Length: 159
Figure 1 (cartoon, rainbow, N blue to C red):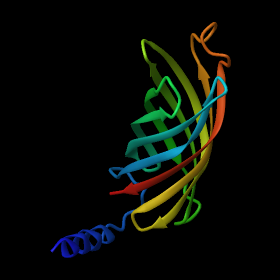
Figure 2 (figure 1 turned 135 degrees about the vertical axis):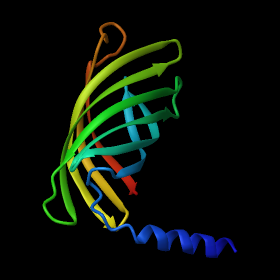
Figure 3 (figure 1 turned 90 degrees about the vertical axis):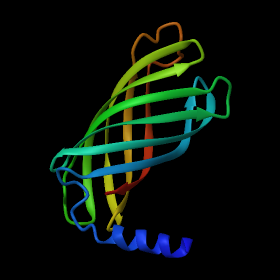
């Protein structure tokens, strides 16, 4: 019975044929990776969601947790990305974000930008590979570095 339900859901999701990046579409992204703060190495896991308010222009939010080193960090992010379609497979993008990070009793804000390429994997999934730059506010005396840059890999399901 469960196999029939899963097969039915997969079939229905394959009927969605609109471009991922059209107005009114949504996507859910899954994040996994590694990051470094003050020379400590963390495992990062997260979830994000986007809604396309115009063709190619999304707004969204997400959560990321940094695990493996004490203290654990939790991040909430608001973002906006613009995707340009080269063809049905490749979609370069530019984006901006604002983030709030919570570490035990301390929290700080940051903002930044990103650039990358979203690559269609199937009719309802894509992978994004990009580069982000982040600037921390009020970091003097707390963080060793007041900015960070990193590579991003995100797997997204679109509906």
